[in-house]
Image 1 (cartoon, rainbow, N blue to C red):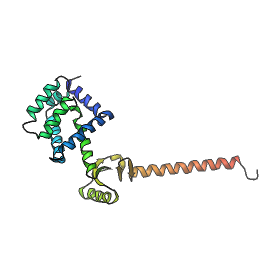
Image 2: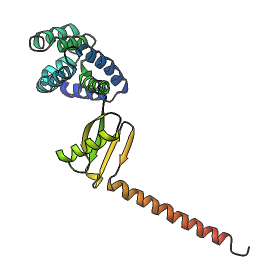
Image 3: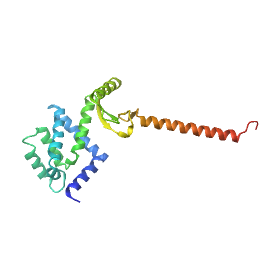
Length: 214
């Protein structure tokens, strides 16, 4: 397997590891706390830009930082040389800390967790909205306004498309799912018809088992 494939496989397994997310949450909390005075949103945007414009755009540099071929001291030196002159002290210090602890592969998870932490602290939470087709801006604003009036927090819409819904919406608020899709309504109707058929069959069996007058 090529080095690049090994890196992607390792990072993918980290992203799916619950324990890795828990570790990422610790670093994310430290990042949010460190960036409070300078502006958390700006710090998270800078980290997102580093992931997209630097690591994603330069796979070789990404492989060096995330892989095991280069030692931590060399990674720290590279970060200070490459990021230090153009990045903020918060980003440079944070990347340096992750490099020293061999945790740079957690960066995508750290960003996810940091956004969740910042949203929660600001009274905001992510609400997943899944539709059969992409929703236009007017529809999204209507959904957001309806959720905002119904929920005890400010909703941040996370939109997704699932063509198998056959119309309607699926809205997930934390662990609760509100499903108004046609697919679900058809399934519910089918289940009710099946239950009614089973009930009628059982009633018929009972009548034959206990004839009138017995």
